[in-house]
Length: 341
Ligand SMILES: Cc1cc2nc3c(=O)[nH]c(=O)nc-3n(C[C@H](O)[C@H](O)[C@H](O)COP(=O)(O)O)c2cc1C
Image 1 (cartoon, rainbow, N blue to C red):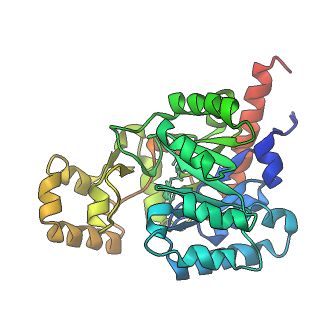
Image 2 (image 1 turned 45 degrees about the vertical axis):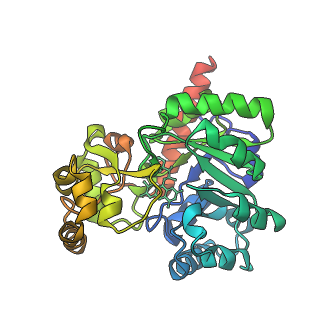
């Protein structure tokens, strides 16, 4: 049975047919995945990540080319960046703002968004801020965010460390209540552990207008992750991930201490658990081991970036199929809850 689509301030703002945003996953959300999700009716954010200029140029241009001038699809295409990294090098951000096809939105995560959001707002480009604690919320709203993403520690990739981080289930309704009171025109998306229609329906019930999905769309045919990494995720279950800074050290990334990284807790990760100071003091041999793992696609050593929802990744499907399945299941559940047949 066909249920009417979800209608709210988020889907209206970006002309969406489903309240889903594709997460801007560094090195995984390239042009092909972003274009597929935009065509499927979701907001799609290219993974500008660390702000590598040539990568962002190639993948954003690829997404635009694939959307072939279709105005509706292009109105759903944006890009995401890591704010603390933009403070070191903002060339990819500045390049994006100069494009003939302007991004529908720019998402900023992990650090003070203020300077970049001001530049984007001056050009009428909506800003999406991903946050992890209540303390970050007023700053994101003051920076002019039209969408807040409340990210729980279940999420794949970077997020708040376990001391300060919040679970999606308690964080989203608390942010929703705050926004209702102080900034009702700001939309809210839930992120972290949303893998299927149950998760999307739950996000809406918790007071969000939609969900930002990373891991489940990472495990699609169009993401830039390797097939071997995706198959490793299919075989893993939800107990198999950990959040730590170990892979950041192995990848020589200088992340601020408050943020760390969730990925599959593989053999190399386990080897360094409880020996973090030793790893920091003398990382070279471990880095070589890791880099060989990456070259060989050996995921006992290389990282596989997925969140705790990995236990719900049982197959690799096209992004279009995943979005359609998630949307349909959520609509069925929500209408069932509403007592409709
Ligand atoms: C492979 C991968 C890479 C990610 N890279 C980024 C990134 O570059 N910037 C960012 O803001 N978030 C990044 N994230 C986090 C997502 O924005 C989002 O919060 C997360 O994927 C939501 O949780 P989920 O993975 O359970 O869906 C990444 C997530 C994954 C899985």
